Length: 628
Image (tube, rainbow, N blue to C red; front, side, top):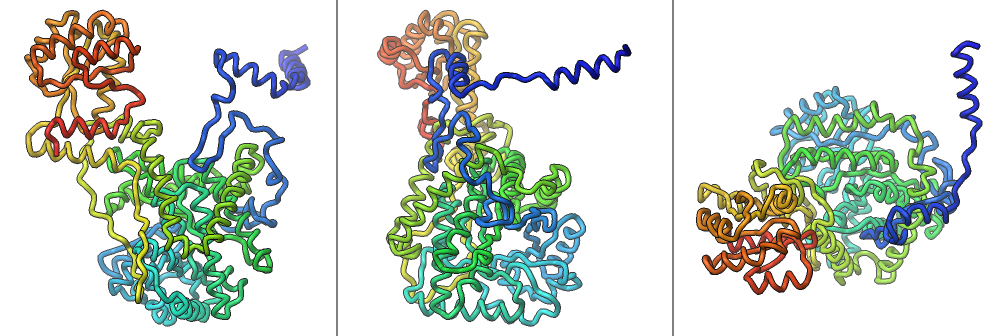
């Protein structure tokens, strides 16, 4: 018998081997054995949405969503049966220029490099750039628009009415989002929405294919909202528009047809996939409440990478963040996608960063082959159950808003703002405690990375509110800012004084003894722009005192192993404090209660460990080092 035939027979035998399927209980026993006595419950994770993530998901936990079909009600798996096969998402990267002519040339250039939509920032038009110049020689019959008009929708209607050629796509604004940003709501909303309805009808006369109503949930996300809140408030805004449109004589179907939902997508990969899938399901379900055909409630989704997760330092990590976010958006099923360039946080971008953002679309489409599979997340037990849970919680939250009188009343009563602030504070606290890592910011900072403070963020809104009622605005808040501000303070100190703020590290005994805690402290203080000066391993308190005398720094941190602390730390601290009573001393690592008390009695101010609030600690250090 030839070797080839023998191998074929052996492979056939391998295929026919059946392995016993372990039960869930057997799996739990195996896991708890590896956890050395801890229960499997220790592997559960709580999210900001209040969802408890399980360590294992099975077919039984996946719910009914896995039986739904793409393109069929309730559209959880997408509004098209063929996914991206027939209509890939539109790359909506804003293109600008110093003049209308320059912006037009820039757009033509990027159209040759993968852009497939006319996406100008409305600021161009608001600042006087004429539409004919912006659209010169553009193939309007094959290029849809995507422009967030940010309060200029009514004013720009005559310009779009004068366009020669086909106009399609999205020329929309979200008035309620603009009110949230500016903190002003019209006292007479009925009069506002009467004009709003006329404007919508004016654009319909330009083209029946235009979508003119934007539901910009990103304003809630950028204030710190979790996925459930973003969904619920977005639905409440959409329902408000449906109600206001009906008051003005518009049909529910005609209003729903003109809507586009714009969601922000952050780095919580699976949560964002579930959020987009749940959004379609809930919006389709609302059709029954308005006694409308669900065909008109096929949610069109614009996704925007999160501004909340952007960082000033180690800015190229933003490329990884936005790629992950764009990937989740594409898996979740979208029609429009905007990827912020990695230097977006600075308020200005360059050709390179814009090209990287644009090319991310192309890589996802052409190399990741997302467009070849309809609903790639479909059938994932984890995603299916997460979709169900997010949908249920978002619906409950939506009903709370409805019971409060709708989104406008909830905003006036500060309900929405307070709930969002509570979630943001939790996120900021977890970042401060370094329970959540921000690469290059609160963990693994690069001390050589130098940046300039970004331009002060301005509210980009052109909405005009007559006789306004003031509400608490929801402003953009980035999680990394609490560390960035400290680091910018240190950079300014270095520029003014010629050197960065420093703390000393008193290392005990051998390198292998103190290195782990030295690395920990270095990483922590570097997040605030503080440099360290470490001693050679000190084997006696006299060596430690000599090091302090040589360096003459106001703050020191003792670093060593637990064994070294037991043998030497108390004497070192006592002798250093005796020789230099004004010196502040910290100790790296949490210790047994008895040793901690002894070290505190010797003169230790505080113990620095993994549960230390890094932001508070760095603020305290900088203040003590004279960095104001």
